[in-house]
Length: 132
Image (cartoon, rainbow, N blue to C red; front, side, top):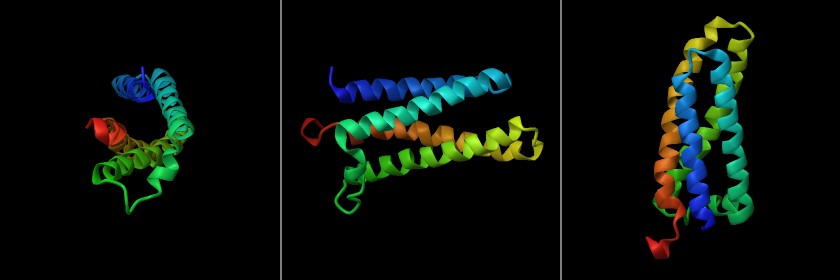
């Protein structure tokens, strides 16, 4: 099994875990555990991809990258930025700041869309051009 397939499977499982976390958003303790696990796993997946493919070096060649890769990078980098915002607002909610809940909810749905689009666009961005 190629590394591409392994990464795609992990990415899909992470997305499924995120959807499960959204489903359990009313159960705060379970929601936090599921989402924390998904975010950590996703960051570890990024490290795996970097170490096996030098993804950051490839991504930095913005002018020469194909359009689908640029779109994929937009959603994947956006997901990581949104993860940071989700953790920051989530921690505030856990600390008792009720005024942050609406922002956390909006950021959460945005993160869900971005992470879903990351998986969808990864099918075109990850596969070698020769096999496409």
